[in-house]
Amino acid sequence: MSYQFPMAVCAEMLWQNKPIEWRVSKLTEMGFAVGLWNWPTYDLDKLEKTKANFSIMNGYLRGRLADDEGAEELFFTAAKTIVVGKRLNVDRLNLHGTDLGERRLPTQYCETVTEALWLKAMDTLNRVADLADK
Image (cartoon, rainbow, N blue to C red; front, side, top):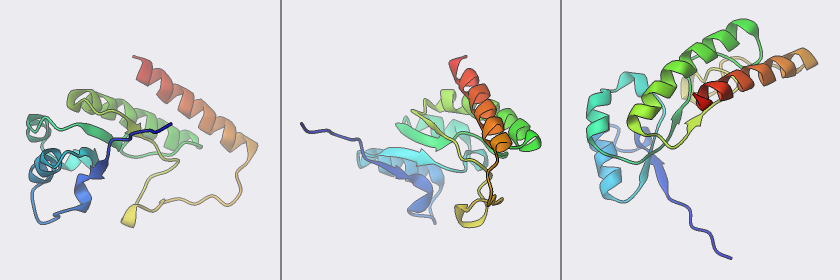
């Protein structure tokens, strides 16, 4: 049995001296789907006009899964991101357990994951999944 997977490239990783819409258009011309990380910094009208197949982008802007304050921020920014994802016809939104900082590394580390943290993370994921259903 053979499987075919569409190839996708994160537009922010290549041709960093070029505008993002140029990179997106170039990747589309080359036959790739396009990934985005930092969508709030781009002109969405220009990205929309590229008619690219956006395969993935960050599904939230800030927040964390497993604590009350972080979960509220994640949920709030995920709701904003879903609107943008629908506008750009993004295939999927990516979700991390915590904010990603410099070099896309987690900003907060947790050495011991308690039952309470797991339960909060599960609750947050359920809330985000409910958003996706709307």
